Amino acid sequence: MAQTMGAEGVVVDQLEEVGPALKRALADQMEEGKTTVIEIMCTRELGDPFRRDALAKPTRLLEKYKDYV
Image (cartoon, rainbow, N blue to C red; front, side, top):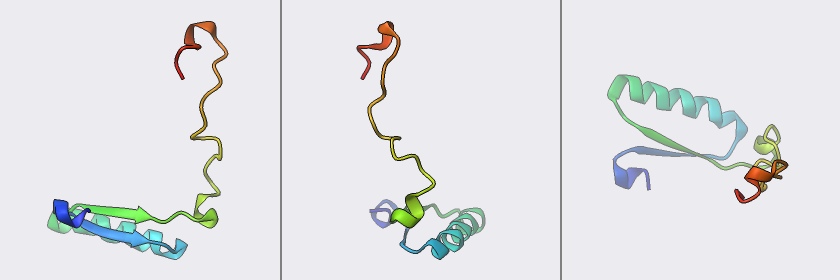
């Protein structure tokens, strides 16, 4: 999809590829003005630093926010 919109597209599926992909994307932007979309395929290894409940619905404790879900 990135390529159809005129950007570079990179898929990263190994942890050791993340750094080089970011460095290459930064270099392409700074030197050639190219935008790069990096798709990172998250596995448990890549996803562990993130909170597991980050996408869960929040618990509203104050009455005035009960309608905001």
